Image 1: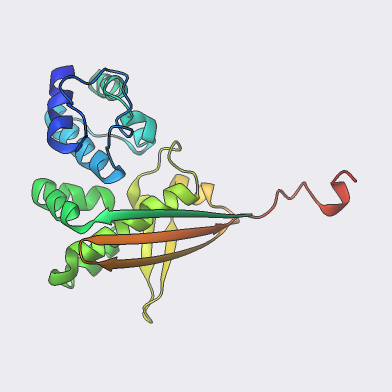
Image 2 (image 1 turned 30 degrees about the vertical axis):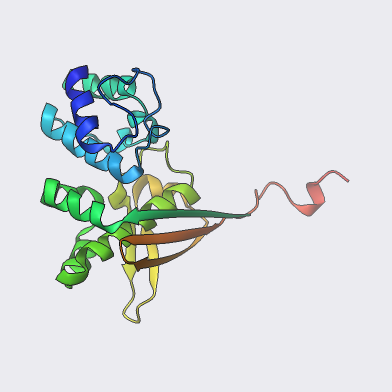
Length: 78
Length: 134
C-alpha cells in the first residue's frame, strides 16, 4: 500500500522532494503540497483503492504524511 | 474579533484537475450552482472554478476549519443577480460559523486566482465589560 501511495504522491502532490524516498512521517505540506494538490491526491487515492473519503476525514491532518494517508486508507478498506 | 483567510490558486492546475479527474473533481469540490455558473462561460470556466476554490480555502482558514472535517461543497460561493458574492455554509461549516458575519472577495489575473474571506467573530458573550477584572 505504501508504494502505491508514494506513486500517487509523485504523480499528484507536486512535492519538492522525492515521494519515493520521503520518510513516512515527513510533513507533506512542508514538502510543498498545496491544498489543491491534496484534492488531486485524495481523488487519485479513491481511484486506486476504490474508496471514498467521507467529509469527516477531510482534515488537513489526514493527508499530512505518508503514514497518515496509510492510516486513512486502512480504515476505509477495512 | 476579526479573522481573515486568504488563498491563491493556479488556474492551469485547476484545468489539469479537470482533465485528470473530470466530473469527480467538479462534484467533490463544487456545488451544482457553482458548476452551473462556471460552465455557463466555457472560456472562463477554469478561472471561475479557481477563484471559487481559493474562496473555499480562504474560508477554511478564516473559520479555522482545517481539522473539523468539512467537505468543500459545504462552503458555497453564491453570486447575487447584481454580481456581488457571498458565502453560504452548510453542515459542519455552518455550525462553525454560527453567529458570525462573513465577507468574501475574489479576483483573478492570468494564471492566478485569489480570494479573501473576513469573519466577524462576536466576543464571547460571557465576557462583558462588567465581568472583566478591573
